[in-house]
Length: 140
Image 1 (cartoon, rainbow, N blue to C red):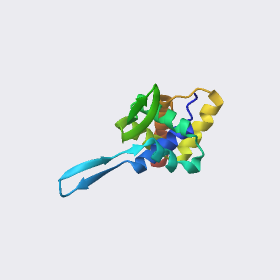
Image 2 (cartoon, rainbow, N blue to C red):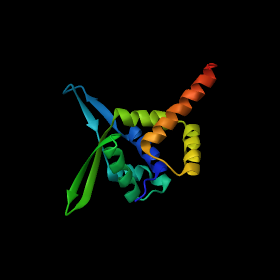
Image 3 (cartoon, one colour):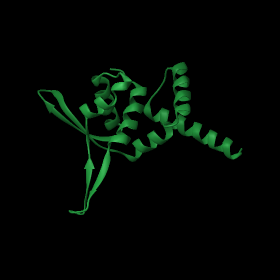
């Protein structure tokens, strides 16, 4: 399978919206509200991704430590997937790639070079943001 980087960005941005923490006053405790793969897929229907693409992205984001997910297996197949959290690295990726202008520049650059990976995307995004911030602040 091929990792769809638009899907990566859309999935992690959607998870940022869906994953919540709720406080229960009665028990004085916090509950992490998780997201299952079907809920995530349904929330991305406007993007026209296949569920296989979304699951593959979630699996890769988990392996890259951008999210925390648990996979259930049966007969050698994944039967369910529960996403519990976005990690610090995942939040850093979101913050670096959130601006659509930054994302478009990254995609244009990588379409020309053909080489792309999550760490490289993150590094290039950080570099672009630094350049834009210096320009906006009038710094050399």
